[in-house]
Image (cartoon, rainbow, N blue to C red; front, side, top):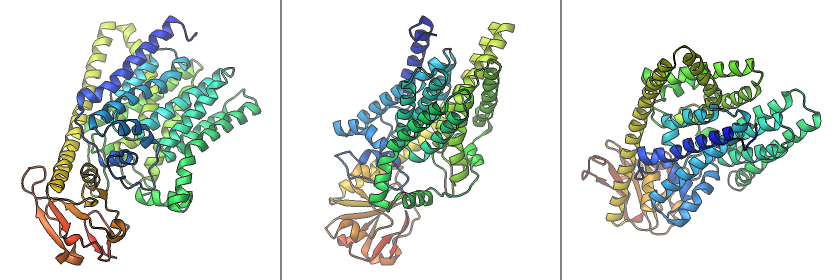
Length: 497
């Protein structure tokens, strides 16, 4: 079907509509006032001229910082950042699903985008400075362009676009890009009817794209961590790496919280899990429908990529976060949409009014559940960010000296808002302050004990002015005494080296 045909243009307009709604949904449902989470402050602060750079640990990559840079350099306003990220998210969705309009020029593609965007995760992270949604965009685009290259070998630029998308994915999150790359190369090797030269070219371009995207991460690994292997081990240690089985944990956090590790005991209610069990059924149905029509290659490949990304988090990460599987949900939405459309067509042939009514009821019920989860998690973040803002104001009002360092609970957000550094638990305080006069504080919730190694050097300030911080304690290092032999070993305590 021609790209300029009226049908394809209508589908393109439908995808544009979904992408615009995707960009607008967090602005409407969450609002511009939604504060920054800890991870966001780390990515944004790396290039923001208004604040000290946060701790950039081994698992992180610089791609997200590059995306936030234009907003950071223009203004330190949260509103500017939220609007900018919303625009990028909508544009990313459109570009990611665009090649699929040629792979499958039907309503499958706009519906797939809508299914994913309708999840509370899609709304929650649409304007957040977090990499997982952009990994989804890169993976969807890379798979779509590769399928086009397989189906239409005369379109040579499709392979280049696939390589570019792989490079973008690697820039956003290197570990995820490996799990996108492997099934795509396997697909290239296994596809029938292709000459060895074409396979070698396709695999080479994908490899070149991956290498280009990983280049910065590898260079930084040598500069800061001693090499890629050492950085990988450091990242694995921070992320509780090793052999695990986290599928059950991922199911339990389907309604949040946004991060569940350590003592977290999340357990999402049954209604929040229903779509999770319906998704594989719809995916299997979509692949079956495509197989009957002899065009299952695209859906098998996109499903393989989605499951590959999921395998990393289910088998190699020892804790759960809903965003980990967001790229998987986005990729699986494509065959799932095919299955949903098949069910719709079958139901409509029996009774179109009943089919429409059933679709409206199911859709409305599903979205009500997703919006409830969105509201709950947004409320949790609001409490956390409001408390961080009050803590930052307290530090400013009580004469915190610049430079300043903050440790303890929610230190990332507090330090970002107070324009302070975050205490690195691995480095002695005196080395971080370099011996210059500074303010050093540790912020803890009620019930926390003081830094026991040198009680005389600390003074406690228990906050009672506002319910969000009631009972929280700020431990301030007296007389700027940062020369004691200290190492910050955890988020709660300063202990002797």
